[in-house]
Image (cartoon, rainbow, N blue to C red; front, side, top):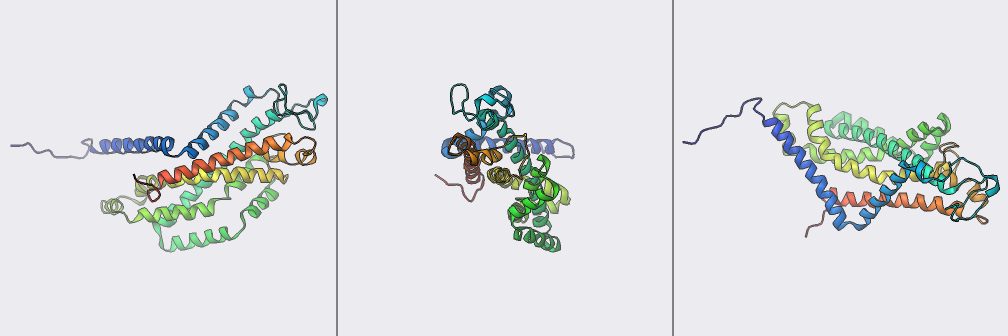
Length: 308
């Protein structure tokens, strides 16, 4: 007669289930990476561009020949050459060094602003979509009010009131996408709120906090990652727009936006490299994040996956 096995509390079933979930999550991301390489060439190209920009920002002191603020009065408006790879500006500063260090500022502002924005948007969207009722009504009316207010005007208002320091620019840009992203995260939460496993968790007496942490957040994480990747390009462009208007990160920090303003407009005809190289790197960054975001959206959203 076959021996019956009885599962008792503490018998190790929970650790095994957690291990199985971890292996499944790991396999999903590995599978996503493999499919990105095989089926999404533009997304792969975007990822490579982003990786190159990140490495350039990390190793800026090793790549730059001269510090970004160092002035060489005898070498004003020198064109690209073997000594000055991207030329010099009207003060004799090395354009290549300023672009490399500018990648640090642009990526730092972009990543931190998007991180704050996505975390807040996810919290608002998940709470609103999961609890529903009066909480959902109140939260969504506040979100509607935020969406009705023009985003760029809100950013300019915050920077004008608080000042255009690095931290204030990051906070101002973080508010840029909270409303729209929270609406999307609410929709993702509504899609999983009434699933069978959610009802089973409630029937077993799981608390709201446990359900949100173990069941809701893992199922909306792909949406949050896609929104973050797509939002990085928009935030970097917004930061460059503030720099172009003179409201971005203040000097002596070099940014691609403020490099396109001032001397670039004044000496564009005489020295076109002042505008060409910052514009090229800004365009590459936005292109890379947009292509990678589009690819991740297609790969992670089951409604957009194609089948062979």
